Length: 419
Image (cartoon, rainbow, N blue to C red; front, side):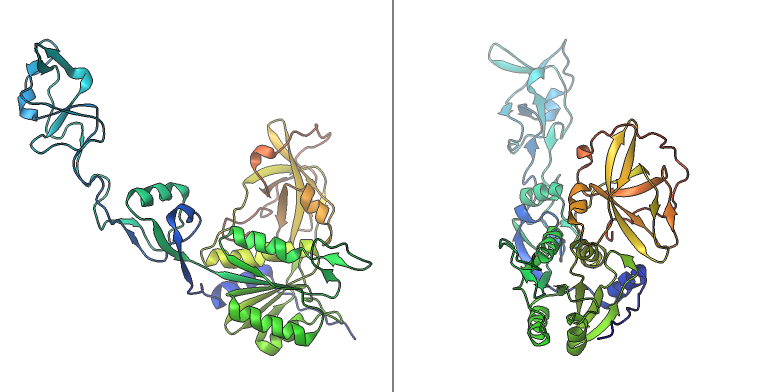
């Protein structure tokens, strides 16, 4: 069989097309507030309670009638007729309109005196000061943060409806076996869908990993038809190239349409974007780091556009310890080891190759080199994105001759919402 030449599309154009063609699925679930962090509201959330429900004391002391304290001072304390002892948070009894702090109170011959005059409402939290029943707590489309959880629970909300999305993941290949078995000659443990599910799940998606499908067009057709029916987004691992056993594109075309087959990015060039029943299907290469790149650069931005955000690391500036040569016709993604060197960071490129998984393990950052750049010199200051906490960046020995030659414009990672 003659190997088909892929028609490469620019990555930015593919992302834009996906954003335009695939609106957010109309799927919601109801979740407990305590586990709603990172979810997005689908309706406005209003308070069922007035908080506080009644006037409450803002200080420990005595509830008083404020007019009775007029003229009070340390030198000339005034007696209180019928003060009521209250602690912070206690309800203010009817007929009282202020609180005198306990440190301003003295007692003589069984009578309470105040050395501080108070105004009406002083040291009192009035009813509804925090929120009134029916007031808006969170609007539609709000990404729920940990700090929102306390307010929701305090105001009587214990569950709410949030956006939901289901992602299906199908591993394929005669050489692929379930993880945990010892591979024989020519066999590999399946890991691509596990990585993709972990990433998509971190963004809030509900993921289903299906059984491995052998390189058989009929079996693959059944699996894809089932997966697209049960999910809002379908990811297929392997079979996306143009070899004699790569059937993913033809099966997608049979069930729907292939929108893109081949993207100008490295790794991940043979990626597929298709549409079946109006839903997106993404075909990932079988090589692990290529598959990771496709998930990170296509699936996660699509999910982010739907309101499901992955947890990216911090962006830092670092100086390259060696020159990087790239293909100016591609978006390239290069794994790096970032270390601290005095008052700045250094970035050491790791070996490139779609199947080099240990590069991913050893890396703690990666660099996006956009099209139009063919090399980045040693010492260049570049923007990189950490793949772990900044606090874990270790110290590096001084790199001799590390002098910035130039700063790379554009060789930085885009804002959150699309890597």
